[in-house]
Image (cartoon, rainbow, N blue to C red; front, side, top):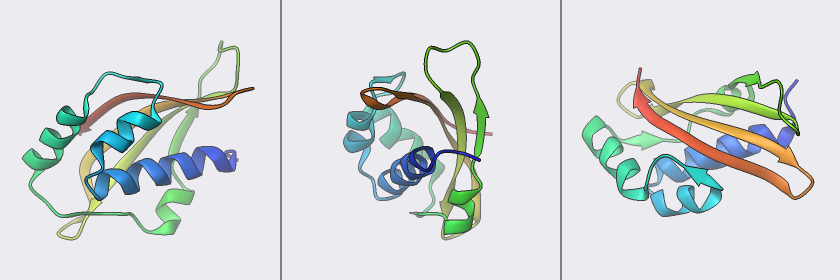
Length: 113
């Protein structure tokens, strides 16, 4: 079972993205391969109306334990949701590590499967 902070982090990131808060997403991350403008462009190019996913989806996120890290770490893949199609082909990927200073998020990608 995943720690609640991993589930809450995934929920918060997806919610911010669905509301177009790209700068806030980047601010949550200690590292990111993307900029706020990159996130904005990917979402715009996808051309749908984004919404937060249902609670049961958040509770069953795809997270894999990452071995050989100094602190507990998970690689998370979370689909975006739209009003037009429900679960979309657009997916957010990030890594979250639980350190003594709290959760450390590394944003890896936002892409179409």
